[in-house]
Image 1 (cartoon, one colour):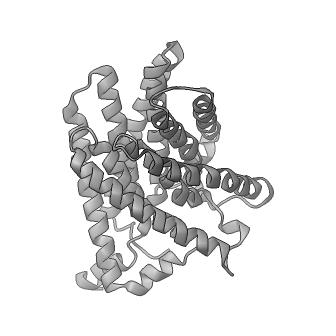
Image 2 (cartoon, helix red, strand yellow):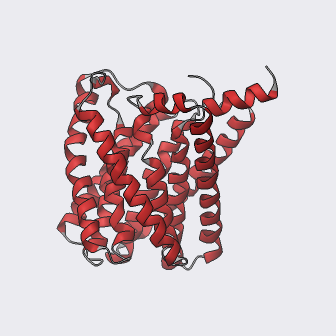
Length: 323
């Protein structure tokens, strides 16, 4: 096969799930921004991460747009796929996360990213939920934690929406995300308890279970002007329990060979780390004094491992291949 044919083949199989990389990098950037306020870290670290995240988003978006132009049938097939369809909103979530990361240093850019990202997120939510309601192909074995992605994006909107002055709009998105997350969680628990486990390659997506309560906690605190009330505590501690539950399954995760779904570890870990930093800031106490740096260290180590393995897999030609 010639180099040109190889390039076309790689592009044809470039997956929408690449946007999960942007989510992980952006979540880490926001966590580092929070840490620099609490612990006095240099702002150069977060600015460097923000630049890396922005470049990653532009690179992934440009590549996928090129795939749309050159291989439209493959994009349509991916959108109709019962699992991959859920990753399309990762593109709009990436924009919202970039908006959050830009709030302090680049508020005008943050406004545009938030506005566009939130609009696209709502469109994806409507289209995907409509597909779930009117279908002839979905089975219980198709359900997986990636189905949370179209929902989590809505819960995330208030994190930037409230500081930008869009309070009621933020409540709208938060309500949609929260009320859809609860029944969807019940659907997934039914699948986990009474049906065969998800394929080994998708096991890392179980970490997505952490994201909805952790992100809901962050948004709830934003919507209530930084107050940690009973609802906030319920959301945070459920997210923390889910994290502990998944770490208790470590023996299953270490057996999974590296592949792109490993990036499903990153954003949920960033979300619970940010939530814990907020608890440290607002509540304090020895527990959070110890837990926050532990989670931050694990998050940064995870990102290094993911970036290294992703670059190595790309150089080896193990990514963007037929499955």
